Image 1: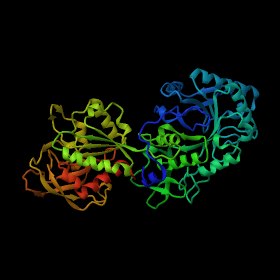
Image 2: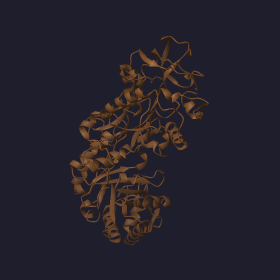
Image 3: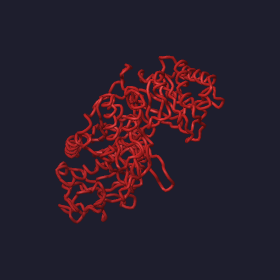
Image 4: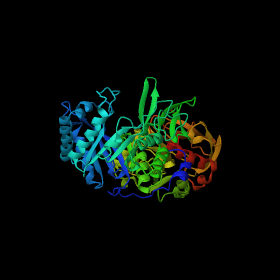
Length: 571
């Protein structure tokens, strides 16, 4: 979500929804692994295929056991929403055994293949994906035999016979293309999902596109080359990418889903040679390798340029709330060029009040910033029109002089979850702290008051006054490059029933002695810009924002740009 120069290198931004891929032989595929243990329901418009993980070889070697059968039925039912979607059962996974015994027996292979066909019939599936990790290998704690490679080919033959030609048969394979005789079994399978991830541990990347000083034992380009050399044609290779980062803590290696990448003790970096992102500690050492939209768009470009069948990822629920990684793959494959999706920003723009001049001036600023910051802005003038469940699709919410009342119950609850769960970023201006026991017939929104530091609006300078704002935390990202003091023209300078400082982190305050003309309406200690670090969402509130002249103040423009980058997680 960083690196704006990637826009020039990679993409023309897609502005509208895109149709599903056709079913032609040469159509690019986007294969999403969806797990039995997660709860997220994937968006069927962002993929061509779903591999449901996992089924397993039954204990008697004769059939297939399926984890969470109810969820599989739910996933298969998504085909009603997208008629082009195909759903497969993926059998296997790391540590899933009994393949070796099953594949070694003519009887067991035949019974297993029939069971796979029956599963397709029973659950309305479109095929089977075999994820045997790995033939001839016992590293995952499973049984193996030197004859596994030969038996794997026989298993593919028997599965194809049982499934017929109308159903899909795909496999997942390790990045180095080992353990399978592709030249013998390719006649039976539709494509190979190359697991080009988990190819290194910190301080090495696990999913680098190209070799670098930080890349692991293999890279994605090397994995594709290995499969080509093993005899797999390009149009039968599907490049795999991870939606999780591989990092480490004091106990060893662990995974982070994309939505939780980051932290205060690390910084995001870019490996120009490897063409992939990573997190570095204070010494500059790689502590977590991961993908972002920039790196995935480049991998999509590689797949397109090399004529690969498409892209695959593990797994849907590891994406962020806005599905940035899934959208990157989908848009890039649909456009047949690298695309970095826009960041969606919802702007609650108050209309028809004394703040209209300021609102219009900020909207003009936002519109000018949108192309260079890769933002798509949605302006609304009433939160009553926002449907339940829509807010999490936005990367940031900007409350542009929109008060904390006259919201629908559904939008208020969704907003609370959005902030509490860190589903996106937040920027609030001026009217957002107009909190009281009752305004225009609406009762106090206690959660929002607590979000603002437990305050209630008390008074304001009705005649407006210029005031000098003093920066307290110049190191905070929102205040970078902002002068230590600057003048805010013609503001109302709200006062509250209490100082918000104990409940928030103050970035700046106003010097009440500087009011011009002078005013007796004062708080004493008077914070005017703050963040609430107790909330997971990156958030900042600006009490300023009454008059249009503020939009022409360089310090204000710098803070707005900073706040947008910060709220959008431009690390």
